[in-house]
Image (cartoon, rainbow, N blue to C red):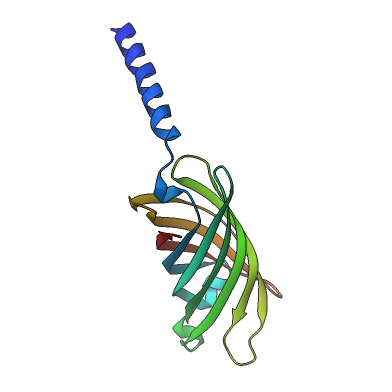
Length: 172
């Protein structure tokens, strides 16, 4: 029984390795993704902000096996808590970074850039965001991208949130 289990496990490992070795068309080449963004403020930022919603465009360009450079721009509308009068604030984050696929569809990423306020008299903050996610191939050169990240905006203190992104990537 143990020998049968061992042989089955070895055969499974070889089969999985062979499947991973085949490169899916949806997972290779340059891609442009359009996505929905959700922000859940944490720390001091969570004291006055409820949540944020918005959208983004993310371009990926492969530079090495499993490594893509990224350029990301979007818009987030942050809803303030009622205790400070409610209302919303607009932010335009613009970032560049890298996405490394640690397994066939799973990735870790990091981005740096700026977050521009759309409010009158608003300022610009340094933006950084490490994260992780998964891409599901759905068609030739297309995939669904779901990711989570911690994002911080630094300017005279840090505003940070947990961000979720669900996107559709088009192969170019």
